[in-house]
Amino acid sequence: MDEDRFRSQTVVCEPSDQVYDFPDGPFSLFTGRRNRVTRIGIGFKHSDPSGKAVLPWVKLKDLSRIVRLNYPLVMQFLDHHAIPRERYSEFSVLVR
Image 1 (cartoon, one colour):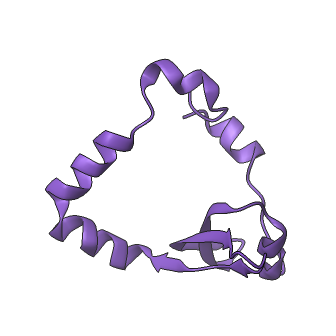
Image 2: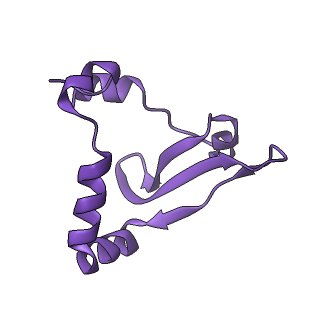
């Protein structure tokens, strides 16, 4: 992953309600101040059929527990849905 490209596509929402203006998709949740920031979860913005934004999220510690308890199944799922190396060039933050 190209860190500079990744950082150039990073948006910090202050206030956090700006996430409602984002396109549907995943986002990271952080807590803390600028000098000490901790990633606490992953959010998923999607719009319901009426157009209302829905923002469910998962705590990282809960996600870690799920992966640990279901490791073979999770790895099978990830292998199945992984982006093939030959398609990396289609995604701006991935580098060969």
